[in-house]
Image (cartoon, rainbow, N blue to C red; front, side):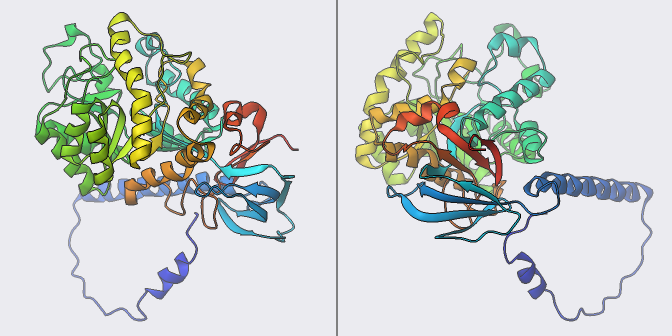
Length: 482
């Protein structure tokens, strides 16, 4: 089991030197209670064993602790434009232990000579859909959870090997994938899961057929019971679905607050959910110490979300200057994607193309205005239903140079995105250190780049060629220097 530095010292220091005697009166224990206690003990023991097995990957096969020393790199910390030179980085277990000149590692450490390459934090995609990124709609419609999980495991592995060591999953049946990743059963980035997107009837995430309505509360659609999405109408249903996602391990909550492109029933201009419904979702999330992110493209939907206290606006390409100023004033995040009418435009039908035009028309204005006003901007890709587009995950990041310097874009995809993820508070699955930075005590998620991405952002477009080392959680997944 991994524990944070000083844990046992604090733990033992808090123990009392003596315990007062307590007289406990025995009572008969019902047979069912005996069974439930035994079952609880069994489940807890199994969870402990699973956790221990998952954490074992941070040691070597010969029993020695994981230790890596990276020498001679130019360090981009994620939060500063200045490269650190003449410093070594020593990784112990899954954390960055020391940064300094001429560090002396233990004998069993792996030594990597960076030879002047740039060492940077692993990339973060703040709007990812692991299940939907590479699977086509016909594939999803013709298969079930077993196939989805297998295909998603491959998609997640490929994501990690593109240098994205963390993703915020913005909706889908990802809880089993998260567990399998954290246990070491599959390779992939860290995941902050939202769980099934919560949509109103006829909202952006309502992918039922018209023949499936009228619906009744006691008859859920198969795509709902398989966690593809949840339909909720009215405050009680919204509260139930939010709490069910939190029960399953959501680190933040996703709702649809306005019209979308790929959906079938909602024009782009629509607002979705009532004020009371959105406010209920925000309150339920805040009661657990986390926040709500909303799909909101049109300006009315953005303001509708802000009225309810939503912290992260997904998309927002139709936001006005006044609305962006409001976001700045209220500290809300603009989680936007560089959607343009270019080679990365998705395949759409005529109804969807008309809606997509509103998105691409607003991308340039919103990026430029948000940057001018100092809005908090996150980077994400929102790749859907295309393995070809998923392979261009890094190219989407490089596209930000239309509006930002390489440093601003890289900071957005590391340091800034990590700040957004931190809004999950104590629900974070990764509490031992910060993400998105190279500093002592941070998680050892790093990329060694053959070249300087602060001068040439296009390097991130071709990770297979330009990323010599990819490390996540102190484990080296790719090393072309051997």
